[in-house]
Length: 493
Figure 1 (tube, one colour):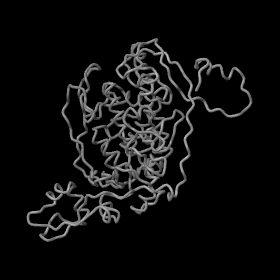
Figure 2 (cartoon, rainbow, N blue to C red):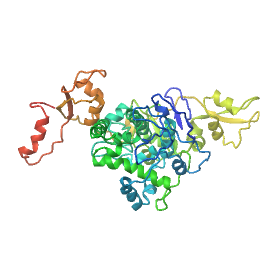
Figure 3 (cartoon, one colour):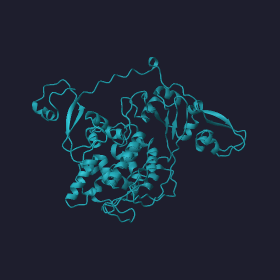
Protein backbone atom coordinates (compact mmCIF):
# COMPACT_ATOMS: atom_id res chain seq x y z
CA UNK A 1 0.00 0.00 0.00
CA UNK A 2 1.21 3.45 -0.78
CA UNK A 3 0.23 6.68 1.00
CA UNK A 4 1.21 10.14 -0.24
CA UNK A 5 1.52 12.98 2.28
CA UNK A 6 2.01 16.35 0.56
CA UNK A 7 4.09 18.95 2.38
CA UNK A 8 1.53 21.71 1.87
CA UNK A 9 -1.69 19.78 1.39
CA UNK A 10 -1.90 16.29 2.82
CA UNK A 11 -3.37 13.79 0.38
CA UNK A 12 -3.58 10.19 1.43
CA UNK A 13 -4.07 7.36 -1.02
CA UNK A 14 -3.69 3.65 -0.58
CA UNK A 15 -2.33 1.17 -3.04
CA UNK A 16 -3.89 -2.05 -1.75
CA UNK A 17 -1.66 -4.97 -2.55
CA UNK A 18 -3.92 -7.98 -2.98
CA UNK A 19 -3.10 -11.41 -4.27
CA UNK A 20 -4.28 -11.54 -7.88
CA UNK A 21 -4.05 -14.41 -10.29
CA UNK A 22 -2.41 -14.30 -13.72
CA UNK A 23 -4.65 -14.66 -16.72
CA UNK A 24 -3.65 -16.32 -19.93
CA UNK A 25 -3.01 -14.07 -22.89
CA UNK A 26 -3.18 -15.00 -26.56
CA UNK A 27 -0.09 -15.69 -28.61
CA UNK A 28 1.18 -12.61 -30.39
CA UNK A 29 3.42 -11.98 -33.38
CA UNK A 30 4.61 -8.56 -32.27
CA UNK A 31 7.44 -7.69 -29.88
CA UNK A 32 6.43 -8.06 -26.26
CA UNK A 33 5.61 -4.98 -24.25
CA UNK A 34 7.17 -4.83 -20.75
CA UNK A 35 3.87 -5.33 -18.94
CA UNK A 36 3.09 -8.37 -21.08
CA UNK A 37 6.34 -10.26 -20.54
CA UNK A 38 5.64 -13.78 -19.31
CA UNK A 39 7.41 -17.12 -18.96
CA UNK A 40 8.93 -18.33 -22.21
CA UNK A 41 11.24 -21.25 -22.69
CA UNK A 42 13.66 -22.19 -25.44
CA UNK A 43 11.82 -25.28 -26.56
CA UNK A 44 14.79 -26.87 -28.32
CA UNK A 45 17.05 -26.61 -25.28
CA UNK A 46 17.30 -30.12 -23.79
CA UNK A 47 17.18 -28.82 -20.22
CA UNK A 48 13.58 -27.68 -20.70
CA UNK A 49 10.37 -29.36 -21.68
CA UNK A 50 8.11 -27.05 -23.73
CA UNK A 51 5.52 -25.27 -21.65
CA UNK A 52 3.15 -25.43 -24.60
CA UNK A 53 3.41 -27.26 -27.88
CA UNK A 54 4.00 -24.15 -29.98
CA UNK A 55 6.54 -24.57 -32.76
CA UNK A 56 8.84 -21.68 -33.54
CA UNK A 57 12.21 -20.96 -35.10
CA UNK A 58 15.00 -18.84 -33.68
CA UNK A 59 14.06 -16.08 -36.11
CA UNK A 60 10.44 -15.92 -34.98
CA UNK A 61 9.38 -13.32 -32.47
CA UNK A 62 8.59 -15.33 -29.35
CA UNK A 63 4.96 -15.72 -28.33
CA UNK A 64 3.78 -14.62 -24.92
CA UNK A 65 3.01 -17.56 -22.66
CA UNK A 66 1.30 -16.92 -19.34
CA UNK A 67 0.62 -19.77 -16.90
CA UNK A 68 -3.05 -20.61 -16.50
CA UNK A 69 -4.72 -18.84 -13.59
CA UNK A 70 -5.24 -21.13 -10.63
CA UNK A 71 -8.72 -21.12 -9.03
CA UNK A 72 -7.12 -21.91 -5.66
CA UNK A 73 -6.81 -19.08 -3.13
CA UNK A 74 -3.70 -19.62 -1.03
CA UNK A 75 -3.43 -18.52 2.58
CA UNK A 76 0.33 -19.05 2.44
CA UNK A 77 2.47 -16.86 0.17
CA UNK A 78 5.10 -19.53 -0.44
CA UNK A 79 2.45 -21.99 -1.56
CA UNK A 80 1.13 -19.46 -4.08
CA UNK A 81 4.67 -18.77 -5.28
CA UNK A 82 5.30 -22.49 -5.76
CA UNK A 83 2.01 -22.91 -7.64
CA UNK A 84 2.95 -19.98 -9.89
CA UNK A 85 6.52 -21.05 -10.76
CA UNK A 86 6.68 -21.19 -14.54
CA UNK A 87 10.02 -22.73 -15.51
CA UNK A 88 9.47 -26.36 -16.54
CA UNK A 89 12.79 -27.91 -15.51
CA UNK A 90 14.33 -31.32 -16.09
CA UNK A 91 17.07 -32.06 -13.49
CA UNK A 92 19.98 -32.76 -15.85
CA UNK A 93 23.58 -33.40 -14.68
CA UNK A 94 24.36 -29.71 -15.19
CA UNK A 95 21.82 -28.88 -12.46
CA UNK A 96 22.50 -31.79 -10.13
CA UNK A 97 25.53 -30.19 -8.48
CA UNK A 98 23.46 -27.20 -7.36
CA UNK A 99 20.47 -29.35 -6.39
CA UNK A 100 22.77 -31.44 -4.19
CA UNK A 101 24.12 -28.27 -2.56
CA UNK A 102 20.63 -27.10 -1.61
CA UNK A 103 19.77 -30.54 -0.24
CA UNK A 104 22.85 -30.38 1.99
CA UNK A 105 21.46 -27.07 3.31
CA UNK A 106 17.82 -28.11 3.90
CA UNK A 107 17.13 -25.09 6.12
CA UNK A 108 18.54 -22.56 3.64
CA UNK A 109 15.19 -21.13 2.61
CA UNK A 110 13.94 -20.97 6.21
CA UNK A 111 16.95 -18.88 7.21
CA UNK A 112 16.89 -16.48 4.26
CA UNK A 113 13.10 -16.14 4.46
CA UNK A 114 13.51 -14.32 7.79
CA UNK A 115 15.24 -11.47 5.95
CA UNK A 116 12.74 -11.58 3.07
CA UNK A 117 9.63 -11.65 5.26
CA UNK A 118 8.82 -7.87 5.31
CA UNK A 119 9.27 -7.53 1.54
CA UNK A 120 8.44 -10.78 -0.25
CA UNK A 121 4.71 -10.16 -0.76
CA UNK A 122 5.43 -6.74 -2.33
CA UNK A 123 8.05 -8.25 -4.66
CA UNK A 124 5.72 -11.06 -5.75
CA UNK A 125 3.02 -8.48 -6.53
CA UNK A 126 5.41 -6.41 -8.64
CA UNK A 127 6.44 -9.51 -10.57
CA UNK A 128 2.79 -10.39 -11.26
CA UNK A 129 2.02 -6.82 -12.33
CA UNK A 130 4.80 -6.97 -14.94
CA UNK A 131 3.78 -10.43 -16.15
CA UNK A 132 7.20 -11.91 -15.40
CA UNK A 133 7.58 -15.59 -14.47
CA UNK A 134 7.24 -16.00 -10.70
CA UNK A 135 10.62 -17.76 -10.69
CA UNK A 136 12.13 -14.25 -10.62
CA UNK A 137 11.04 -13.92 -6.99
CA UNK A 138 13.87 -16.37 -6.23
CA UNK A 139 16.56 -14.19 -7.82
CA UNK A 140 17.35 -12.12 -4.68
CA UNK A 141 17.92 -15.41 -2.83
CA UNK A 142 20.45 -16.45 -5.48
CA UNK A 143 22.02 -13.00 -5.84
CA UNK A 144 22.49 -11.97 -2.23
CA UNK A 145 20.77 -14.37 0.16
CA UNK A 146 18.34 -11.45 0.50
CA UNK A 147 20.81 -9.14 2.27
CA UNK A 148 19.91 -5.51 1.44
CA UNK A 149 23.28 -4.03 2.46
CA UNK A 150 25.60 -6.57 0.88
CA UNK A 151 28.34 -5.19 -1.42
CA UNK A 152 30.11 -7.43 -3.92
CA UNK A 153 33.77 -7.24 -4.92
CA UNK A 154 32.54 -5.70 -8.21
CA UNK A 155 30.66 -2.92 -6.34
CA UNK A 156 27.22 -4.42 -6.94
CA UNK A 157 24.87 -3.60 -4.08
CA UNK A 158 21.63 -4.82 -2.51
CA UNK A 159 19.38 -7.84 -2.78
CA UNK A 160 19.39 -7.56 -6.58
CA UNK A 161 23.14 -6.77 -6.75
CA UNK A 162 22.75 -3.72 -8.97
CA UNK A 163 25.75 -1.79 -10.27
CA UNK A 164 25.56 1.96 -9.84
CA UNK A 165 25.36 2.60 -13.59
CA UNK A 166 22.52 0.08 -14.05
CA UNK A 167 20.63 1.52 -11.09
CA UNK A 168 21.04 5.04 -12.48
CA UNK A 169 19.87 3.93 -15.93
CA UNK A 170 16.66 2.55 -14.43
CA UNK A 171 15.91 5.54 -12.22
CA UNK A 172 17.40 4.59 -8.85
CA UNK A 173 18.98 7.42 -6.86
CA UNK A 174 22.35 7.04 -5.15
CA UNK A 175 23.93 9.87 -3.16
CA UNK A 176 25.34 10.67 0.27
CA UNK A 177 21.85 10.50 1.82
CA UNK A 178 20.33 7.51 0.12
CA UNK A 179 21.37 4.44 -1.86
CA UNK A 180 18.36 3.12 -3.74
CA UNK A 181 20.16 -0.15 -4.44
CA UNK A 182 19.77 -0.90 -0.72
CA UNK A 183 16.10 0.13 -0.81
CA UNK A 184 14.39 -3.23 -1.34
CA UNK A 185 11.27 -1.98 -3.13
CA UNK A 186 12.97 0.73 -5.23
CA UNK A 187 15.71 -1.67 -6.33
CA UNK A 188 13.08 -4.29 -7.16
CA UNK A 189 11.43 -1.91 -9.63
CA UNK A 190 14.79 -1.25 -11.30
CA UNK A 191 15.82 -4.92 -11.38
CA UNK A 192 12.53 -6.05 -12.93
CA UNK A 193 12.74 -3.32 -15.57
CA UNK A 194 16.30 -4.47 -16.31
CA UNK A 195 15.13 -8.08 -16.67
CA UNK A 196 12.37 -6.99 -19.06
CA UNK A 197 14.99 -5.10 -21.11
CA UNK A 198 17.28 -8.16 -21.25
CA UNK A 199 14.37 -10.46 -22.10
CA UNK A 200 13.60 -8.31 -25.12
CA UNK A 201 17.26 -7.94 -26.13
CA UNK A 202 17.68 -11.72 -26.16
CA UNK A 203 14.47 -12.43 -28.10
CA UNK A 204 12.58 -14.06 -25.27
CA UNK A 205 15.31 -16.40 -24.03
CA UNK A 206 15.20 -16.24 -20.23
CA UNK A 207 18.42 -18.20 -19.77
CA UNK A 208 20.35 -15.73 -21.90
CA UNK A 209 18.66 -12.84 -20.09
CA UNK A 210 19.56 -14.23 -16.67
CA UNK A 211 23.15 -14.85 -17.73
CA UNK A 212 23.37 -11.27 -19.00
CA UNK A 213 21.94 -9.99 -15.72
CA UNK A 214 24.89 -11.63 -14.00
CA UNK A 215 27.79 -11.03 -16.36
CA UNK A 216 26.67 -8.33 -18.79
CA UNK A 217 24.83 -8.17 -22.08
CA UNK A 218 27.98 -7.78 -24.20
CA UNK A 219 29.72 -10.85 -22.81
CA UNK A 220 26.70 -13.10 -23.40
CA UNK A 221 26.24 -11.83 -26.96
CA UNK A 222 29.92 -12.50 -27.64
CA UNK A 223 29.57 -16.03 -26.27
CA UNK A 224 26.52 -16.63 -28.49
CA UNK A 225 28.45 -15.45 -31.57
CA UNK A 226 31.37 -17.73 -30.72
CA UNK A 227 29.00 -20.67 -30.22
CA UNK A 228 27.38 -20.14 -33.60
CA UNK A 229 30.78 -19.85 -35.30
CA UNK A 230 31.45 -23.36 -34.01
CA UNK A 231 28.31 -24.60 -35.74
CA UNK A 232 26.22 -24.71 -32.59
CA UNK A 233 22.87 -23.02 -32.01
CA UNK A 234 23.94 -20.65 -29.24
CA UNK A 235 21.78 -22.08 -26.46
CA UNK A 236 22.76 -21.16 -22.92
CA UNK A 237 24.12 -24.62 -22.14
CA UNK A 238 26.45 -24.39 -25.15
CA UNK A 239 27.98 -21.04 -24.21
CA UNK A 240 31.49 -20.54 -22.88
CA UNK A 241 30.89 -18.18 -19.96
CA UNK A 242 32.77 -17.29 -16.77
CA UNK A 243 32.42 -20.04 -14.16
CA UNK A 244 30.41 -17.75 -11.87
CA UNK A 245 27.82 -17.13 -14.60
CA UNK A 246 27.81 -20.76 -15.74
CA UNK A 247 26.87 -21.68 -12.16
CA UNK A 248 24.57 -18.70 -11.59
CA UNK A 249 21.66 -19.75 -13.81
CA UNK A 250 21.61 -23.35 -12.47
CA UNK A 251 21.35 -21.90 -8.94
CA UNK A 252 18.02 -20.33 -9.82
CA UNK A 253 16.78 -23.31 -11.81
CA UNK A 254 17.72 -25.76 -9.05
CA UNK A 255 15.88 -23.73 -6.43
CA UNK A 256 12.80 -23.50 -8.65
CA UNK A 257 12.98 -27.24 -9.35
CA UNK A 258 13.20 -28.22 -5.67
CA UNK A 259 10.21 -26.03 -4.80
CA UNK A 260 8.10 -27.40 -7.65
CA UNK A 261 9.13 -30.99 -6.89
CA UNK A 262 8.27 -30.50 -3.20
CA UNK A 263 11.34 -32.49 -2.25
CA UNK A 264 10.78 -33.91 1.25
CA UNK A 265 14.30 -32.97 2.42
CA UNK A 266 14.03 -29.33 1.34
CA UNK A 267 12.18 -27.25 3.91
CA UNK A 268 9.78 -24.55 2.70
CA UNK A 269 8.90 -21.57 4.95
CA UNK A 270 5.41 -20.42 5.82
CA UNK A 271 4.39 -16.82 5.27
CA UNK A 272 0.96 -15.11 5.36
CA UNK A 273 -0.32 -14.23 1.91
CA UNK A 274 -0.75 -10.52 2.53
CA UNK A 275 1.51 -7.51 2.96
CA UNK A 276 3.10 -7.42 6.41
CA UNK A 277 4.44 -3.91 5.81
CA UNK A 278 3.05 -0.68 4.34
CA UNK A 279 4.94 1.89 2.29
CA UNK A 280 4.24 5.53 3.16
CA UNK A 281 5.38 8.46 1.02
CA UNK A 282 5.46 11.63 3.15
CA UNK A 283 6.51 13.78 0.17
CA UNK A 284 8.53 16.00 2.49
CA UNK A 285 11.80 15.70 4.33
CA UNK A 286 11.74 13.78 7.61
CA UNK A 287 13.92 12.88 10.56
CA UNK A 288 13.84 9.28 11.79
CA UNK A 289 13.41 10.34 15.41
CA UNK A 290 10.27 12.35 14.53
CA UNK A 291 8.80 9.42 12.58
CA UNK A 292 9.60 7.10 15.47
CA UNK A 293 7.73 9.42 17.83
CA UNK A 294 4.72 9.71 15.48
CA UNK A 295 4.40 6.05 14.55
CA UNK A 296 5.55 4.33 17.73
CA UNK A 297 8.07 2.32 15.72
CA UNK A 298 11.62 2.46 17.07
CA UNK A 299 14.34 4.23 15.11
CA UNK A 300 16.27 0.96 14.99
CA UNK A 301 13.38 -0.90 13.37
CA UNK A 302 12.73 1.95 10.93
CA UNK A 303 16.35 1.80 9.79
CA UNK A 304 16.27 -2.00 9.57
CA UNK A 305 13.20 -1.91 7.32
CA UNK A 306 14.55 1.00 5.26
CA UNK A 307 18.24 0.27 4.62
CA UNK A 308 18.34 2.63 1.65
CA UNK A 309 18.65 5.63 3.98
CA UNK A 310 22.29 6.27 4.84
CA UNK A 311 21.67 9.10 7.32
CA UNK A 312 19.15 9.78 10.08
CA UNK A 313 17.18 12.03 7.73
CA UNK A 314 15.84 11.82 4.21
CA UNK A 315 17.58 13.83 1.51
CA UNK A 316 16.44 17.41 0.83
CA UNK A 317 15.26 16.39 -2.66
CA UNK A 318 13.88 12.99 -1.65
CA UNK A 319 12.88 10.27 -1.84
CA UNK A 320 10.73 10.47 1.29
CA UNK A 321 9.18 7.00 1.37
CA UNK A 322 9.27 4.80 4.43
CA UNK A 323 8.26 1.21 5.03
CA UNK A 324 6.34 0.64 8.27
CA UNK A 325 5.89 -2.74 10.03
CA UNK A 326 2.10 -2.45 9.77
CA UNK A 327 -0.43 -4.24 7.61
CA UNK A 328 -2.99 -2.17 5.72
CA UNK A 329 -5.61 -2.61 8.43
CA UNK A 330 -3.12 -1.95 11.23
CA UNK A 331 -2.03 1.28 9.59
CA UNK A 332 -5.55 2.64 9.22
CA UNK A 333 -6.39 1.71 12.81
CA UNK A 334 -3.09 2.88 14.32
CA UNK A 335 -2.93 5.85 16.68
CA UNK A 336 -0.50 7.38 14.20
CA UNK A 337 -3.18 7.52 11.52
CA UNK A 338 -6.19 8.05 13.76
CA UNK A 339 -4.62 11.03 15.53
CA UNK A 340 -3.16 12.80 12.55
CA UNK A 341 -4.98 11.80 9.41
CA UNK A 342 -8.65 11.12 10.09
CA UNK A 343 -11.80 13.09 10.73
CA UNK A 344 -15.48 12.19 11.05
CA UNK A 345 -18.32 12.11 8.53
CA UNK A 346 -22.04 11.56 9.26
CA UNK A 347 -23.78 9.18 6.87
CA UNK A 348 -26.80 10.60 4.99
CA UNK A 349 -29.45 8.93 2.84
CA UNK A 350 -28.15 7.12 -0.28
CA UNK A 351 -24.53 7.11 0.94
CA UNK A 352 -22.51 4.02 0.04
CA UNK A 353 -18.95 3.02 0.80
CA UNK A 354 -18.19 3.13 -2.91
CA UNK A 355 -19.53 6.67 -3.26
CA UNK A 356 -17.73 7.88 -0.13
CA UNK A 357 -14.48 6.27 -1.27
CA UNK A 358 -14.67 8.15 -4.57
CA UNK A 359 -15.68 11.37 -2.84
CA UNK A 360 -12.78 11.29 -0.40
CA UNK A 361 -10.21 9.85 -2.82
CA UNK A 362 -9.64 6.58 -1.00
CA UNK A 363 -10.72 2.93 -1.34
CA UNK A 364 -13.66 0.94 -0.01
CA UNK A 365 -11.29 -1.45 1.77
CA UNK A 366 -9.49 1.47 3.39
CA UNK A 367 -12.73 2.97 4.72
CA UNK A 368 -13.93 -0.38 6.04
CA UNK A 369 -10.58 -1.02 7.74
CA UNK A 370 -10.41 2.48 9.19
CA UNK A 371 -13.83 2.05 10.78
CA UNK A 372 -13.31 -1.57 11.79
CA UNK A 373 -16.53 -2.55 9.97
CA UNK A 374 -17.51 -6.18 9.50
CA UNK A 375 -19.93 -5.44 6.63
CA UNK A 376 -20.37 -2.77 3.98
CA UNK A 377 -23.81 -1.73 5.27
CA UNK A 378 -24.29 1.92 6.27
CA UNK A 379 -26.95 3.51 8.48
CA UNK A 380 -28.21 7.08 8.17
CA UNK A 381 -26.73 9.10 11.03
CA UNK A 382 -23.80 6.72 11.50
CA UNK A 383 -20.50 8.52 12.14
CA UNK A 384 -17.59 7.31 10.03
CA UNK A 385 -13.91 8.11 10.24
CA UNK A 386 -12.39 9.27 6.99
CA UNK A 387 -9.05 10.65 5.95
CA UNK A 388 -8.54 14.38 6.12
CA UNK A 389 -6.46 16.77 4.06
CA UNK A 390 -4.31 19.15 6.06
CA UNK A 391 -0.74 20.38 6.11
CA UNK A 392 1.58 17.94 7.87
CA UNK A 393 3.59 19.33 10.76
CA UNK A 394 7.35 19.71 10.25
CA UNK A 395 8.96 16.28 10.32
CA UNK A 396 12.48 17.60 10.84
CA UNK A 397 14.34 18.49 14.02
CA UNK A 398 16.23 21.75 14.30
CA UNK A 399 19.97 21.14 14.16
CA UNK A 400 20.50 22.58 17.64
CA UNK A 401 18.14 20.06 19.23
CA UNK A 402 18.79 17.11 16.96
CA UNK A 403 20.11 14.08 18.85
CA UNK A 404 22.42 13.32 15.96
CA UNK A 405 25.91 14.63 15.43
CA UNK A 406 26.59 16.68 12.35
CA UNK A 407 27.43 14.48 9.41
CA UNK A 408 31.12 14.36 8.57
CA UNK A 409 31.95 16.35 5.50
CA UNK A 410 32.66 14.05 2.60
CA UNK A 411 36.18 14.20 1.24
CA UNK A 412 36.43 14.72 -2.53
CA UNK A 413 37.18 11.56 -4.49
CA UNK A 414 40.56 11.76 -6.22
CA UNK A 415 40.45 10.51 -9.80
CA UNK A 416 42.86 9.70 -12.57
CA UNK A 417 42.35 9.88 -16.32
CA UNK A 418 42.03 6.63 -18.21
CA UNK A 419 41.70 6.00 -21.95
CA UNK A 420 39.40 3.32 -23.31
CA UNK A 421 39.50 2.10 -26.93
CA UNK A 422 35.99 1.60 -28.32
CA UNK A 423 35.33 -1.97 -29.47
CA UNK A 424 32.81 -3.36 -31.96
CA UNK A 425 29.35 -3.57 -30.39
CA UNK A 426 30.18 -1.19 -27.53
CA UNK A 427 27.51 1.14 -26.20
CA UNK A 428 27.77 3.95 -23.67
CA UNK A 429 25.64 1.97 -21.26
CA UNK A 430 27.82 -1.15 -21.54
CA UNK A 431 30.97 0.92 -20.99
CA UNK A 432 29.39 2.70 -18.02
CA UNK A 433 28.56 -0.69 -16.48
CA UNK A 434 32.05 -2.04 -17.13
CA UNK A 435 33.71 0.87 -15.30
CA UNK A 436 30.83 1.60 -12.89
CA UNK A 437 30.45 5.24 -13.90
CA UNK A 438 27.22 7.07 -14.86
CA UNK A 439 26.44 7.48 -18.56
CA UNK A 440 25.97 11.22 -18.01
CA UNK A 441 29.61 11.47 -16.85
CA UNK A 442 30.83 9.64 -19.97
CA UNK A 443 28.91 12.15 -22.09
CA UNK A 444 30.37 15.12 -20.19
CA UNK A 445 33.97 13.88 -20.19
CA UNK A 446 33.92 13.23 -23.94
CA UNK A 447 31.67 16.10 -25.10
CA UNK A 448 29.13 13.63 -26.48
CA UNK A 449 25.37 13.55 -26.77
CA UNK A 450 23.18 10.61 -25.85
CA UNK A 451 22.55 10.10 -29.58
CA UNK A 452 26.25 10.12 -30.52
CA UNK A 453 27.53 7.06 -32.39
CA UNK A 454 30.56 5.23 -31.03
CA UNK A 455 33.22 4.41 -33.64
CA UNK A 456 35.39 1.34 -33.02
CA UNK A 457 39.04 2.30 -32.52
CA UNK A 458 38.26 5.76 -31.17
CA UNK A 459 39.27 6.69 -27.63
CA UNK A 460 37.03 7.59 -24.72
CA UNK A 461 38.31 9.45 -21.68
CA UNK A 462 37.22 8.22 -18.25
CA UNK A 463 37.98 9.66 -14.84
CA UNK A 464 38.26 6.74 -12.46
CA UNK A 465 38.86 6.81 -8.69
CA UNK A 466 42.53 6.88 -7.81
CA UNK A 467 43.57 3.93 -5.62
CA UNK A 468 43.71 4.87 -1.95
CA UNK A 469 47.18 5.93 -0.84
CA UNK A 470 48.45 4.80 2.56
CA UNK A 471 51.95 5.40 3.95
CA UNK A 472 54.05 2.27 3.52
CA UNK A 473 57.36 1.06 2.22
CA UNK A 474 58.20 2.02 -1.39
CA UNK A 475 56.76 -0.47 -3.83
CA UNK A 476 58.95 -2.08 -6.50
CA UNK A 477 58.58 -0.60 -9.97
CA UNK A 478 57.11 -3.85 -11.25
CA UNK A 479 54.11 -3.35 -8.97
CA UNK A 480 53.20 -0.10 -10.75
CA UNK A 481 53.84 -1.24 -14.31
CA UNK A 482 50.21 -2.15 -15.07
CA UNK A 483 48.92 1.11 -13.64
CA UNK A 484 51.43 3.12 -15.70
CA UNK A 485 50.19 1.42 -18.85
CA UNK A 486 46.62 2.51 -18.12
CA UNK A 487 47.22 6.09 -17.04
CA UNK A 488 48.38 8.99 -19.16
CA UNK A 489 51.67 10.50 -17.94
CA UNK A 490 51.59 13.80 -16.08
CA UNK A 491 47.87 13.67 -15.28
CA UNK A 492 46.62 15.32 -12.16
CA UNK A 493 43.70 14.42 -9.88
